[in-house]
Length: 148
Image (cartoon, rainbow, N blue to C red; front, side):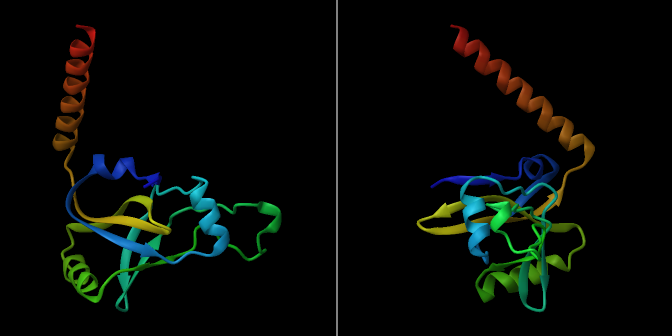
């Protein structure tokens, strides 16, 4: 299972409550671009509209610029493929204003490209400081163990 894109800021800025695996609707040129590792999830988010789930603001640049159609938009909205049950859960949770849906990573599962999305709650500044402190202490412990 190859990991094509990560949203590292999401793990730092949000507390992850639930994770879901979704398929993604892509054009052929986008599939090649994603498989070559050119996709970016920075600033991307997920919305539910009309019983469908969309990935917004994810950047997939064209694989070959010269062979790309002139009307291609690398930041276009992409439909995510989930079950009706999962969509209903996301709709009900989106009504809660303190919760957000963000993409965590893009990877392959067999020949399919999947997006891991998560229902998240924003961290406060104090919680972020604790995360930084914990990360630094873990790093120090690893250095000490490695040095022995």
